[in-house]
Length: 382
Image 1: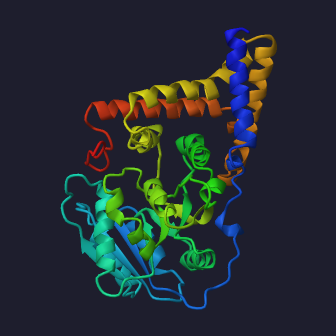
Image 2 (image 1 turned 60 degrees about the vertical axis):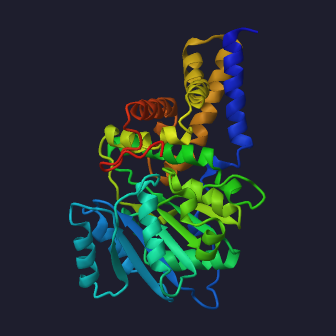
Image 3 (image 1 turned 120 degrees about the vertical axis):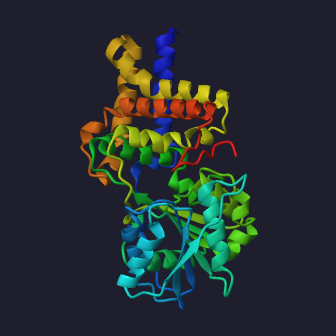
């Protein structure tokens, strides 16, 4: 057997596996709007914890959407102002005043101690503040660049109560307007679903655990049983790390949604590169061996099929064409979800190559001592 035939056959086998045996991740069918759960007999107390560092451009819309929740029970919001220098807290306070709402509390975050990721430290302070008086039944751990439809919290709580999940998380719909966003954002969600198939995440008996950090409704008592937020103190990928801890004490659920939107713009390719590079090498546990394996695996999975389809011959070429077709087809559901042209399907190898470059850049930034850089903080390898 020739090397090209072996490569083409392996790539084809990979895509058949992804099509048939990876939890049908590619269907993008596990969605919050397809759940229909009854209202609970009583609505539990909720506290939203919002870490915010220099979010002046989005905080009014984000906090405004939380203040507008039609939740029937007691609901308060703790904004942790994480050493902002752009007036984030003042804008949030003005937003609450304009809404004539008393739901918002603003907490000035303290300096980041050694061993903590910035966001997790802010979450720690907000959670501690939320539990000072009467501890809430649930915590809504959310980001400062997330906007919610008015019924989102009510639907989240109803789902959590009906299913007894200790974590219900929604993958915020990212902005997909600029050329860079249309080219790269659907693939970001596609790759995430491939790594953490939602169907597997949502099965108690399956060890796979994942969450989307922009929107996580967590049972407060389950968080304590899982070791508290301290258990993930240094995690850059805090959402999936927290999901793994929580799944050890109860069922979790993760799905797509149109009700939760990310306000963060990524106007250029460099903006998405920085977003991915911040944590990609952390995903590989800062291991050069895993990095090399990732490079080889992505080259075999994404680069080999189009290359051999165009320049191969015989059976190897046919297998490569088949792999490329499968790849293009299973990318279509997430393209439809983001309302992006289906013509991006055959271009997935180019998009994957860009993400591979971002991953290599993440490792390079780590070696330069700038890994995990986010708003002036270097956090990698804590």
